[in-house]
Structures are given as structure tokens and as C-alpha cells.
Length: 553
Ligand code: VG1
Ligand code: CO
Image 1: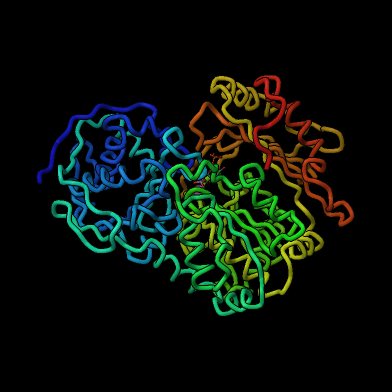
Image 2: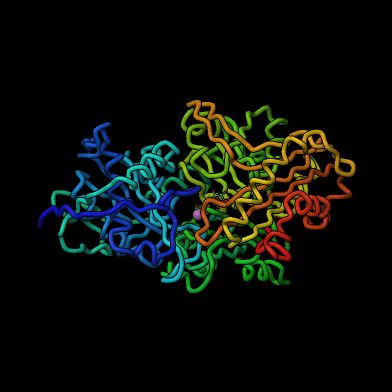
């Protein structure tokens, strides 16, 4: 076995988006493509000096490695092991079969004090040979690489000329145990064990077991993605939920043709089950890498923004949060429902740009305990990622502790705090030039919008959201165009940073309703005037020729 030095050339267009590098599988399978990115990452972790020479900061350290099991996961694992062995990594903790969910990677990094970890996933993007692949790096706090590190890796991919790789044969990644690649030790670990231990430390497993014993029914759709093994081991294994509670529970390379982006369109099957006469008490789904959650009651869908607000209001019912919360954070486009709870409870509430990496500093500094995004993501300080199964266990526990249904919990919440009607309209696969022009024109129109009235509403803020991290002072500009009205309504425009085909425009719509008698309308109806206004301001339908959004959540 020997370390080879292989020539590579700079790849353009490798700029990572909201969470890591995501491209079509066919792009990732180009010779040296994955290698180029991984070598750039290792160079940056080892330290790149001003003269371009690479240091040894990574030498002697441990990395965690695993992915969501999608097509190319297994090959990518073998490639990364060979590069890691040639770049000074001492030990890799590899999930068995190359499997680790995003929150599990975070839990393993933190629990075993690893230097960092690599997650192989394109998360909610489709998989299979024609689908997407992705890679992201998580730092020693267990959280996504910050913008500085991400930019440094990108810059390095542009100037890289060499890749260091071992020519060792592939290893067996399916059997628990230890083996070697060159001098590097590889420990193939149980993907679930570390994560399950964290869940046990937060939730009252005895109480949850009692619920299932008394006949509580639940349907979890793992969408043939990585959440299946975790949900089966914890819900059916430890908590005694009947076999079959978890459906689509084995990770498949193409997700069995499903699109593991749990929303009302892709998780239609689950919604149909929850709307049926014999619906179970509780329904839930997770995405490709199991960091997202969708929760439903019988004949009742929970909006992710409401979910964060309810979790905040009831957190003390959960053993892991019985001392109360340090504070809460939400991404800017997420509804302000949680803000109202935080205000009532005297908690600090932070507003960050989209993407979990922005919560890391707040969590590390002990400023917040819970975080959430409108995109079906919620999480807490137990790891540094959003966490799908954690959210499901949280909602299960809320039902157990209160004896109330999902619907009654949410309706009571609206009665107390008012309802933030909310919807996100996605226009997918727009031509990039059309999307860029739309945003440029909106940006140019912002100064004139200030103070203008539309019907009974006056614009109080019209800007492009900029965020100054309260912990390290770093500034992230151009994070979404927001138009906020004097009655709390908001319309926000943002381009996705995770898509791989053209551009995706996201329009976020929010309207606050305090009147209990007005809280039972369909969201699209309650938001209809804002939907019309968004069209008036952006002209998205005319510009794209699309009569309606691809997905409305
Ligand atoms: C989307 C969501 C964002 C989320 C990100 C990663 O990003 O809007 O809230 O953090 O996906 O989620 P964008 O840039 O496409 O809007 V995951 O579960 O795909 O890692
Ligand atoms: Co995800």
C-alpha cells in the first residue's frame, strides 16, 4: 500500500450552498470531482499557509463518517477513507454500511469528542443514479461548517493541483469492528447506539412505553431514507410500538422512488392515512438524512413554525428541558409564532438567516436551547443539527404528558397566542437568469416600498435581510428580501441554496390572526391577499410562465 499523489484541476461551480455541496450524481461521479472537494477540505482542516503550504492540524485526530444511504454513498465512503488515510487522519468512526443520519453524525462527534465529521447526503433532494448527491462537513461542536470554513474550502477547490490518496483496497464497511487503511484505524460503529443514548437522556422512555402499552397508535413514514433504522430501533424496539408503526423503514439507494422531502406533496400517502376514518393518533415523516420532521395529528396538519412555538411553550414537560429554556431562535422566514411565546415567557428570541449553521454559535454560547425553521426543521442543544426523530419524540411526549391530541394542543395554542397563518410557495427549476432578474428588480424596488400602503396595510420594513452574528460579529448580507407590514404580516422572497436544477424561488407568506373565530380558515385562503400582493410585487407568474407554485407548504 502506498500514498499516491494524483493531479487534479480546479473545478468551478463547486460553491457550496445552504448546507454543503449538492450536485447531480453524474457530476459527483466525474473523475476526481469528489476527490477535489475532499482534498480541499482536508487541506483547510490541516491549515493552509499564505504560501499555499499545508500544515498538520488534522494529523492524529478522529473524524466521523456516514451518510443517508443514497446512490453513490458506498463508493464515496471508500474514496474518502483512502484520502483521509493519506492526509494524516488517525481514526475514522464509520457508520455500519456507510449509514449515519445527520443528527447521528452530530451526536457521535459530540459524544466521542471527534475533530469533526463528514455527512454524505443531499438531504431532501431526490436520490438514485439520476438524482442528487451531497457532502458536508461538521466541526467539532457537531454542527455544520460555518461560512468562513465553507468559503475557505471553496477557495481551495479553485487552486488545488494535487490529491493525496492511498491505493489500499476497499474495506468491508458492513461488519462492526476495526480495520486499517494505511496507518489509519477505521472503527465500523453501530449507527444508532450513540444517538439512541442521547434520546434516552432527554425523554421519559418509561412514560412513552406506557403510551404504546395502552394502545396509542402512530404511523412514521421514513420514506425509504436513513431515518428508518433509527425510528425502528427506538419506537418499535425500545418503546414497544407495534411492528409496522414505521413504514418505508429501510434505506434504499433511490428511496424506492419516493422523494424524501416531507411536505404535503411528497408525503401525500402519510397525509391520506392521517385523514382517513381509521387514522392513527399521531403521524410523522422525516427527510433523506432524517433531520427534518413533519408531524400530524388525526385529520390535522401541524405547520412547522407552529411546531417550534408549541415546543417552546411546553418544553418544561419534557425531562431534558424541565429546567426551562435558555432562549430560542428561528430562521428569518419562519413565522413569528415562537416570538409571541418567547415574549410571554421572558425568553430571548433570535432571528437568523436560513440554514442550520447560523444556530451553532447561539447554541454553543448557551444563548438558546431550541431552534427551528419553517422548512420542517426543529432541534435543540442536544446536537448541532436539526433532528427529525427528536422532534417526533418531543411531540409524542407532549401528547403523553398532557393526555391531549395534537389538534387540541395546537388549537389551544392559537386561542392563547393567536394564529400565524403561514405558507411557503416554491417555484422550482426556473431559469437562473430569470430568477436573478426577479430578485434584482425587487431589491431595486425596496426603497420606494417603504411606508407605502396596500389596502389596509402599511409597509414598515422593506429590506434585504442582513444578519450580524451576536457571538462572533460576522455579517451575512443578502439573506432574503422581506416586506413587513404594520399588522405583522410578511412577504419574503429568497432563492434556494440547495437546489441542483436552475433556480428555486421561495415566497414566504405570513399573516397574524388574533380573532379565535377567524382561526379555522384554510391557510391559502387566509393568505390570499398576500399571495396576490407577492405576485404584484414580483411578477413571478408572468416572468416564469408558471401559473402556480410547484409546491405550496
Ligand atoms: C432549505 C431550507 C432550509 C434548510 C435547508 C437544508 O434551504 O429552506 O431551511 O436549512 O434546506 O435542509 P434552501 O436554501 O433550499 O431554502 V436539509 O434537511 O436539505 O439539509
Ligand atoms: Co435534511
